[in-house]
Length: 214
Ligand SMILES: [Zn+2]
Image (cartoon, rainbow, N blue to C red; front, side, top):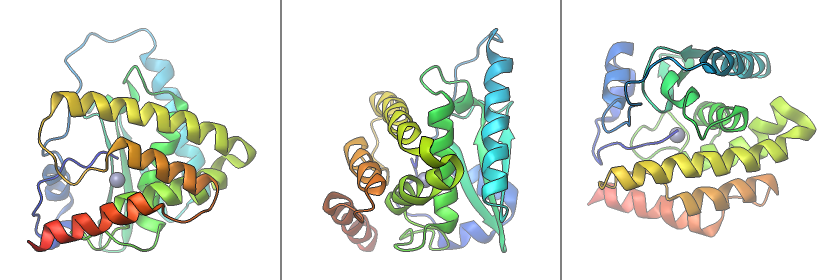
């Protein structure tokens, strides 16, 4: 969901073992503070399980898994051979700014990395680019799972994800290949209207490709 990756990663990384893929992606990812178990933890876990079940039914070619005990505030799409996987980490599920809407849009985004088509990520070329994954999430992923409720959930989820991302941005100074929240917001809205990737996103994609070739 949040890509705080170093600028140069070997493209072969995605094809190494599962443990290495996960470890690599932990770089710069924010962690939940150590905390005592909260009263609403059980409810949050149940909500996450329910959202995962909905996505599993809608996209049977993708395997979704909740890593409840992880403190990572993120989610991840990864592939091993042809197997398509999505991990949802407990730190994001327990984040106070995230509700069912944010979790749903997160899973739609990760699914979009697998099924969103082009443009592909300039570094990890097996997966759909971050901005296109957002676009696919709003235009196809969410409606496929939530039907007429998708629009409201997408808008609410986008606000939650933007709030969490801004929180990280305040804590982390480095700029990886993350999309600025304003551009993500524009992409979600264009996706809801099926207008294609907005020009701000297209420019950002070109900027990222150019930055990698320097
Ligand atoms: Zn992503």
